[in-house]
Image (cartoon, rainbow, N blue to C red; front, side):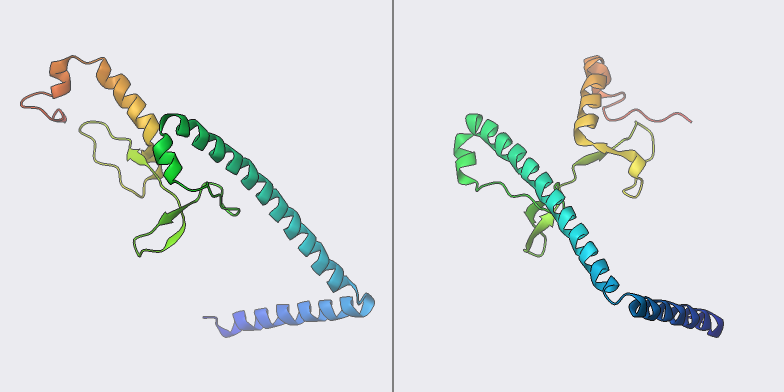
Amino acid sequence: MSKRKRLEKIEQAVAERVAELNSELDKDPAEPERRRQRRARQAAAERARRVERAQQKLAELVQEQAERARTHAKEEAEKGDPKVSVSDLEARAMRLADGAVAPAWNVQSLPRRRPGWPPATASSSASIRPIGARTADWRREWSRRSPSAVAGRRGGGWPIPRR
């Protein structure tokens, strides 16, 4: 929603732009076509870069599949060839809740939480770390503790926070 002054400013800006384009067209009738062709070349070059990156990612996935086939041959034989999205290399084809198969991401993460602290919220990106980093920290932290400390104090569980 715009008020009268705002609409008048927009109308004036549009009129100036139309006049500028008309004068440009009068000076050089081929300029708009050259601009369109330049944008088309840029889009084609960007598409070529994305396809090249997708080819590299596909080669990585094929190599990962071959390595996994050495240890899990039966499971890998049932799978099809790997697929890669040209628009987003990290996206994989996944079945969604509504039954559709679409590009999606499998985000595996755990909140960065210490005993006695309030739980992290999903909106706090600073409190989320990749699951591999969290499990490594957890293993390192708990491997140094004695079995009684791991079980917790007073009947198990996390220690009660001090105020």
